[in-house]
Amino acid sequence: MQSTGKLYYTITEVAEQFEINSSKLRFYEKEFPSLKPKKNRSGDRIYTQADIDHIREIFELVETKGLKLPAAREFLQTKDKRGREVQEHIKKLQGIKSFLASLRDDL
Image 1 (tube, rainbow, N blue to C red):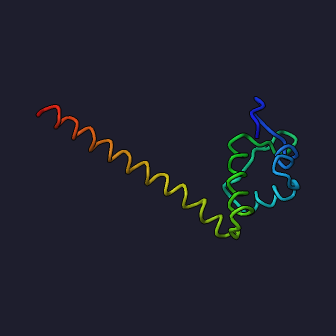
Image 2 (cartoon, helix red, strand yellow; image 1 turned 135 degrees about the vertical axis):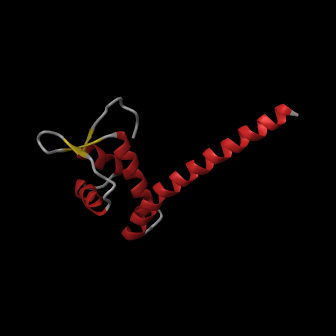
Image 3 (cartoon, one colour; image 1 turned 120 degrees about the vertical axis):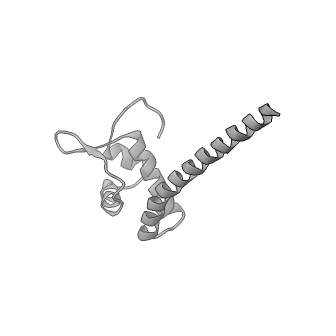
């Protein structure tokens, strides 16, 4: 979505962006537990940019890559785990790098 400076978007605005019905967004909300847009006082869904990015990722997996819903759900769940593992590896490598740098400086 183009950066319009808005913090929240209505379900209609998001549906128009993806050129789908708002009912499909509600369906994705039921099928993907990670997609939980907030609701305002009157109960209308309000989407943040992070929600829209998540929808874009779901849309890419299901509509573009052709994954079935269970496969897309599993991919998104394991993606978070993989991200944490990558961060742990990066942290370990940074420790090794600083150790090697200190060894080099001592020589």
